[in-house]
Image 1: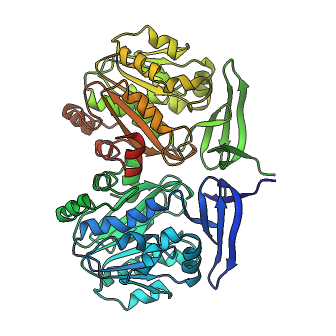
Image 2: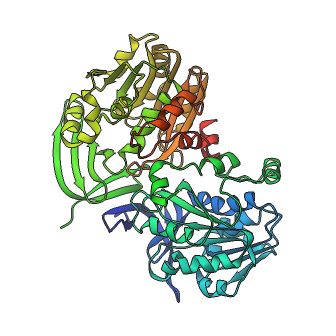
Image 3: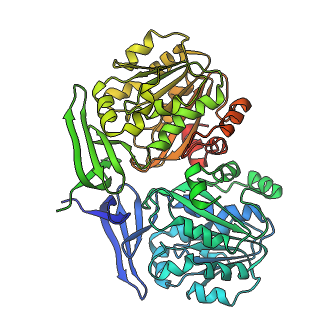
Length: 282
Length: 282
């Protein structure tokens, strides 16, 4: 008989199902259940507590967006903090930027990083870069002691429930703000605006209560419930589509083999449809 | 026990499931099975031969895109032809443009229009406009006799299989080209580029073999398999993002209550990510 994985969402009234070739890994870590499935349609699939996190077929979309947008605005950024993101996909994109001197990945669950290294080596390839530091501690506690340290902070979190709920509060955004330098940028995953299971309006209200500039980008995430994803952009000085001309010329000269990101797309994906503008208050 | 509707896709290895409140309608027309489900997550859902066509929760995205993009480029467009589109959602958006004098809806299956009028009255509200003509005949045969007639032709088709396959051929695109005036624009649904079940490269190759200007827009369709949708733009004279300034001022003065479309989004959604550019050859 066929074996299928199913993730129910939107108050358990909608589900994405995918046919399983085989279960490659299954463990209960100190923090959560970690599973790796091999599937026909999506390649390898990483699950945390039964929720889809990363698929081989579309992981580059999320990771390139988070990795390149802030760096294209801040050509002199030196220090990056990534909270969550144990699959290491954002690190892979960050190390492509020679301006960066230090990339701190703060992932509470060391086992997620180990499992990613084994089953998603294409995601973890940046971890051998000498600028990368892995810290397996609680990101919320870590950031409390950081003041005026980071040019870029990325919040690569799960949904706003359980232990990730605190990563969507105004108090947490204030800590991120304090950890950033004067031109600092925070980017975070901010859920989907059409089915809107978690109250996107409130998330952006919290971001706006702390940052002077708050905006968003959108892109598809075919493995996530709701499938149309918003990426929050909170900034102290520069606007979301304010790419630096030096960085644009640099990108044009490189051959980074990006599958999603280009600078025209960057500007275009910041032009939001009416539904998103009104929900986000932009 | 709970009752669920499921649509399998991508070679039957992926599925979208939605919980059903009730089955509102079920019939076998001369052409296809027509069903209307009431669902918790997506509101009312129209199925043709078991495939999702329209949901109340996201129908406005598709219909506003098809209805407004060509009209914002051609402020003096007078005649529109819509092939397929029996739910009448595109007609609802077209009638908002006072420049249009004639809107022909050519839907082969009269029963789809009747079912839409009963269960999706918010989609069919434009059908009482005196400029609208419903012709329940085969669109491919109809267009053969039209030469230099229409400013805008919209192909609102099902997937390229069965009786809709012909709507994706170079021969058909040539007939659309011949039916268009010198500044004419064709828009068509061109499937999803990530899972790419039907060979999107070939579709755009066919469009380019006929039209001098071929481009695309992208938007989410949360009820369609693959969920990230491309909307083809083929044109004799004007480019995809070449909005007419008079029409932009007109739109800014109106209160059309659009839920998705705005002119900034129009330009932005035409800035394609690398994956889409390379697959479409743009």
